[in-house]
Length: 342
Ligand SMILES: [Zn+2]
Ligand SMILES: [Zn+2]
Image 1 (cartoon, rainbow, N blue to C red):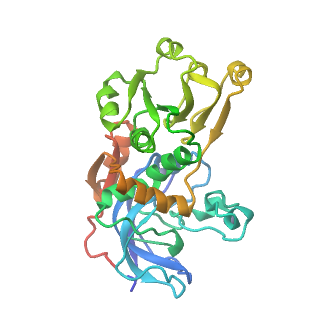
Image 2: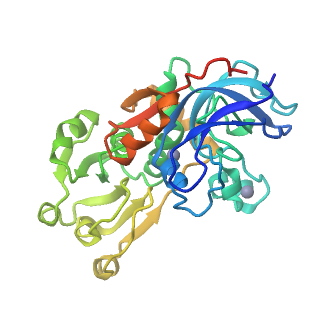
Image 3: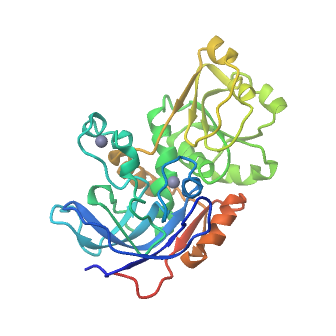
């Protein structure tokens, strides 16, 4: 069953606050599910999209792509789910299923990637969302909804590269940034057997970084980094913004890898990069198989993002906390819109 209109929160122009927004249910394909939303995380990517940082935002824009809710309607081909099932949905809500990358099972690289976003036409800061059922993942039984919500984007973003670049268990990893992504990367990396060093510009993050499972903590100023010469096989950069890359690159072993998962500014001197045969590589979300694997791995190893819960009606306050870098460490909105459950 579907309501005649849906209530969400939309921004109507670049960088503007969200306001209540009513819209018609989007068209419903044969593989689609409608999901009645109980929780939705707030991700930096939502804020980038509100600001049209990527140049792909259509307004009015309803953000939100760390969704947990209940299946309220299914298309005839959505055979793996049933009404009432609890599901999680991440940034990718569909794919073309036809391009070379989708056929290889790497849907996160779909040639039509912009069109695969869960927030098209409208995202998860809402009472209801419509996606392809093959991108709706039942979380493990007993996993709290706010935990599952955060794993749908932040979780897969850090788990996927840690899995694909993993080598022998003694591999030395530096996690740059102890924030929304970094605190999860530390937990996953510890559980995967890496020797983990957390690098942060904030000395006060030390205690928490160690509590999340880091073996070591380093304040990432140039002089501390110089002492770390040739320390790491892998550096995972989870923080956005500008960095002094040269001291970070000098902390990599020869042939080491710098892996980017956010969208930091990349301006650097290539001397160490070339002379030490370093690589800069990236990782974007993860495919459906890795998403399922990540959820069960997180559950089995007690991976627990630190979450602040806020009512969805306070979405603008939540976005402001994230903009000011005050969230510890992720914010999840709880749907408090009455009478809109399908
Ligand atoms: Zn995200
Ligand atoms: Zn495709």
